[in-house]
Amino acid sequence: MNEELQGDQKLNKLRLAELAEKQAQLAAIVNSSDDIIVSKTLEGIITSWNPTAERVFGYQEREAVGRHISIIIPPDRLAEEDYIISQIRNGKKIDHFETVRIGKDGKTVQLSITVSPVIDESGKIIGASKIARDISAQVTSQNAARKYTERLEIMNMVMSSISEELDLNKILQKVTDATTNLTGARFGAFFYNKIDEEGESYMLYTLSGAPRDAFDKFGMPRNTAVFHPTFSGERVVRVDDITKDPRYGQNSPHFGMPKGHLPVVSYLAVPVISRSGKVIGGLFFGHPDHGRFTEEHEILVTSIAAQAAISLDNAKLLEEVMALNDKKDEFIGLASHELKTPLASINGYLQILGRRIAGTEHQLFLDKALHQVSRLTTLVNDLLDISKIEAGKLKLRIDAFDLKKIIEEAIELIQQSVSAHTITFKSNVEQCLVNGDAQRVEQVVINLLSNAIKYSPLANRVEVELRREAEKVVVSVKDFGPGIPKDKLKSIFTRFYRVDEAAPNISGLGIGLYLANEIIIRHSGEIWSESEVGKGSTFYFTIPVNIT
Ligand code: ADP
Image 1 (spheres, protein in one colour):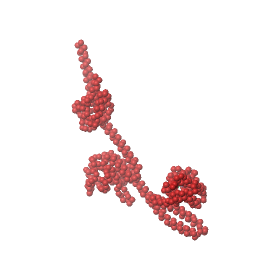
Image 2: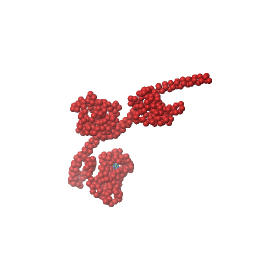
Image 3: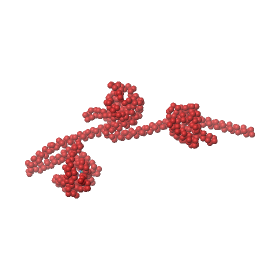
Image 4: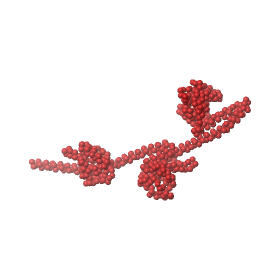
């Protein structure tokens, strides 16, 4: 019996030693783990706290053990603990739960935690063990990557939106708004040097984050020590506190910011330089707090400024082209006006001469001269009409007239000077009264007829038709010439447009159809062309009929 007892005691001792060894091993693992390993009771009282927990949270083991786990839970996340404990009570494990905890110094730590129930020998759940990994660095880099992507997206958006824009003021405003937003500046401004028509330079500016009257009273920035590097295009200026900068406050009369100026402490200014290397402006940002602008902001604004410079150059080029275009219109107007008077005199003198030499051998030359004068008069009149349209001064004299009669007269006029072509006319009505400017509509018909003949030199007929429908009249002029390619059918109605390859030897200015279109539009009608290359073209126009 005794021997038996002694044997049992030996065995127990052995087991205890084994157990102690295992516990020591476990403790060593827990102590040397890089993960936070903490256990607590079901009431949330901390029962163990490893060295990594000490390092991450700043509480020593003796400070933490015995206290409630809520010492490391941010107040707005206390409910999480109730949830965790309820899961544990039900014997459930929580895996890789990402959350935030606070250390002794109040700093937040991003954690990924796994919580498992602790079960005693009888199978009862007596607490929870928590293994947590500090993922602050990972979260920070994820956040940085997200922020970076967001910024890239915003930048792309800004870049593409300003590259599409050709309106100077809109570009300036978009760039100011976007860069102010991206830098987190309280206010931003874009000062842009503009040269007016007389070559005088002046400044335009746009603001973001501040009303215009906050700046208007100060006038434009002068070339002070602070502004100089920007307006000379030397470099970017980024200062945490501009009021402490040696360049600040050196110039009279204000010696610093003028009274009432928006408060600027953090300051960032980026020159905007055109492709030609000329400084065309500067972007300025301010914030009332210290040290708000970073190197990243500087890089962002510099890239947008480079894109803005390109768009501003384009807008400037467009303005120049438009100004030249206006000048050209002005010249056409003046020139045609000047040509009209001598032409009228030549015509008058030729008529007088005509009466004197009527019936003589010279009559033929005179007729030819008169014909050329009439061609020239039509051209000059067309050019004058163009400038009237551009100036919005093309007036119509509206009256009721018989469109059928007008077409017949136009055909007669053209047929007189044409021998190779026969012009036929078909109408579904005896008379066709419409409201409009008879002379202008006749001008359209003459133009379509002249083109039909001019552009079908190898054909021998032109067919004209008038069709009175319920609410409109449709007039068509059909020729049997080489036709017009489909992709050009719309363009031929624009100013100065000619289909070169179709008629390389036929002269013209490309204004007849433009005028025809403008006239028909003013009659609330429509004009278009249908054509098949090699077969000919048909030009149509409609004029609405007012049924009273
Ligand atoms: P212009 O005849 O003085 O060039 P228009 O404005 O009358 O100017 O016509 C514009 C262009 O349309 C012409 O240059 C010509 O290429 C094309 N076009 C006009 N009418 C015809 C037609 N009947 N057949 C083929 N091409 C035509």
